[in-house]
Image (cartoon, rainbow over all chains, first blue to last red):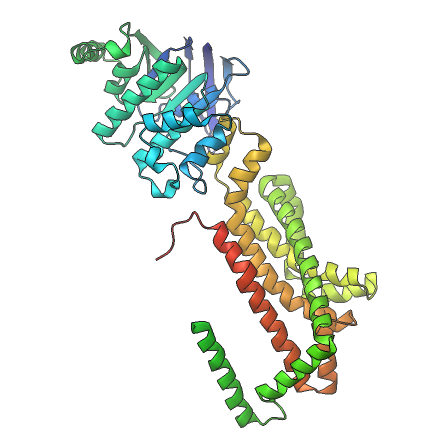
Length: 236
Length: 245
């Protein structure tokens, strides 16, 4: 599934009637199985960009092309689970066709098996984020959108979840788009990194990483990070 | 156990009040019980209770269905809200008596008029409650349903309706108590049967035991319906919520 994005501009009108430019030139394409990471300062318009990509916002100038029948799995910044449905029911609502074997494997991979019958109100934020991931993976998406899925988690858990995301993306070869603040996450997961300017956001650099993510050593990751730091692309 | 205790306290208070006020103005419990039994034996009690309950059920269902639909529409569509709002304010503040009398004048002393009048009295509170509920819907969950391409009907049932459930329960609860109160007035003014009609008769004959017999049986039925139907329903709707300490 190829995702081609060319957003020329997006403006907002606030309550006082003033116009604000949010996006000013987002231009990229991702092929099947590619994981693109977007890094940019807080409030630069990353979430606005994602809303346009998934079709929640149609009020912009430009063009987004994705196959009309593409299944989209999304992990929002907040888990957005239905509190009145159990973990499993939440996943099944989005993915009614998922069979038991695949769901079990997915729950096992995300270490959610013990929590299948819990309600979201009984889960910690880390667990709820994993349920949101499970829901996005369960529909076997063609395009996967991850909006800071690891924010506000402790380091160990974030690292663990990051590895799980990488493994799941590799096994299913999904076109994936990850938004993050964390340069470490970006370098460990991404096939291509896109750096965004402060608002109004535009892509100021696209950096490919050729080594497959599973084969990246700590030394290599440090080297890439050092290179990026020299480029001084974003305020990292 | 506590309920039984409070019932005993009620009976004791009643009996003491009888001793103080005199049996003529407040007959003691056994006298009233005898009337209840006599009315039950003749079948009149069940006929009248049945007629009242049927009116309550019909008016309640009618007002809840219509009120929920209108409330949802007004909560979702700005135009509907602006068009409907003056009507809503008018209906909310219109005395029940006016609606009932006008209904009987315009539609005759018929069953349709009675049920419509009761339903119209309850309708605006259901609309207001459901409108608030609809306004409070979580847009984030709507977006989730859109992105995951959950079909509309399914999303309404599993994403929207559970969010509205507490409001529906609140509208049902307040609406039911309103209907219980108004149905008797409607019967008193223009129906040839029902608890309200019997109370009207008792009032004209100054038959206090008969008046109490019907009032208390009616109150008993309301209590039973509230505990057996309404409360378990509410508990079921909110079973996913963490329990209050």
